[in-house]
Image (cartoon, rainbow, N blue to C red):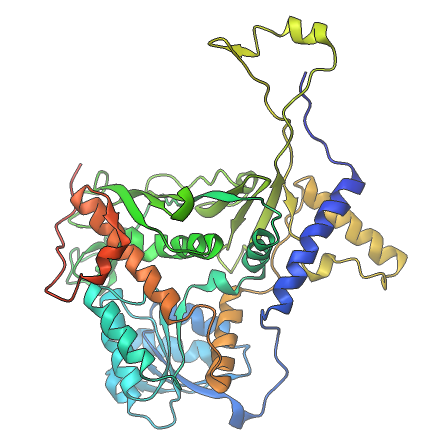
Length: 473
């Protein structure tokens, strides 16, 4: 009978070592390390526009960065702005109108964390004001904004524009990309991704679009689940495949939440990439189970599948859980040691006249970071502790987590790029490709058809794109 593939210590060390090489390559390719203390006059002076949940989250994780200093905050909500100023602790100036913040000469860069429909107008004004810009995803909301922002940003090469797709700044995700480039996964043909919640977004009182807290639930302000959640994972697929999709099909429904919202409360999408590769994506609002990583994490993650191996990965929440990943080699088909055993099992291995044999089960292997690398300089005890951690990772007892929140790495990198004018990993074209996918995915669901990505070239140039209301279940 088939047996579970129980790896020996030697196999664990050998296979983990192979992944370690890819991890080291990722680090060499520019994942920012913690910077040495910089002089105050070399810090990038920045302003935060939008101090709600996301803006405050970023500020909390930028308190420890020494290459940027918050000198201004802006929000229409005075209480949120006051709280954000306390979070960052630099006594920033406060503004209710973002244009007043942009007029401040000491503000070199701005971070834009407002509702999606305001991303483009504020980004445009910030670029015209001569500021470097970090804008949360999705970068833009409408097709015409794609064309206008590309032209504007390209006309200002001395201003940095980065979009908030932080998975590109995770050492785990960079390691997986290098594993793919080195052929360690074989031919990567499929990616499955999900972001499931239970419950999803809840309508705040007073209900309706007049309450700013409900902006995600209405199409006049929001791109729905595709923009707010799916955009992260569509970008992962583009990055791992190394190309953009050719077309997308999908179905969305407003089936559970009858509270006045007009965005879908569940979506399922399939993206077709060159060479027949596919991303299968799901976002629902009624169940948070994640069937990856031994179900040790909830809600969101990706499974990247190649002909030689697969990787299950998630970025985590950056608070209680950090990025982690497991690598699964493709196992050989099960063998039967004794012909008599095969004969005895013939009823089990035949279905509709076709003989088959399942591969052996296995545990995923962790991607090992710096603290688990064997350098040869360790004491006997240190080395044995590293072997022990590796063994426990392989057995699923411990999880190998990234040591630093990718949000911190992304923001540190942004400030560095503002000084060097290097191109960000999540740059203008990455952001526009991601926004294109969001716009066309929603169109595919709204119009019940296959939408080709080349359609974006004509959209937004001869009139507004159609935006029908969500179909109700």
